[in-house]
Image 1: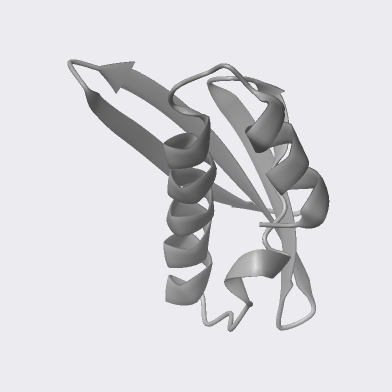
Image 2: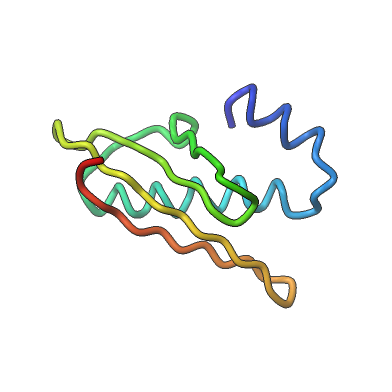
Length: 88
């Protein structure tokens, strides 16, 4: 986690904040690695729209990739879905 992400998570009362932060990065990492990216886990910085949706931008081989991330928590499980799009 970045220092800012860590401070936000540490201050949160959300019991899922740590799991959600890890799950969003892992989902984005797996999505990008399939496309050939070799990005450090801590360099993945999602922009949260709310507690359930985030996006992340990365450059893979000179091409901008947008990863849309959607989270759902149900029955003590966290589901994170990542989808990739090329361009803006």
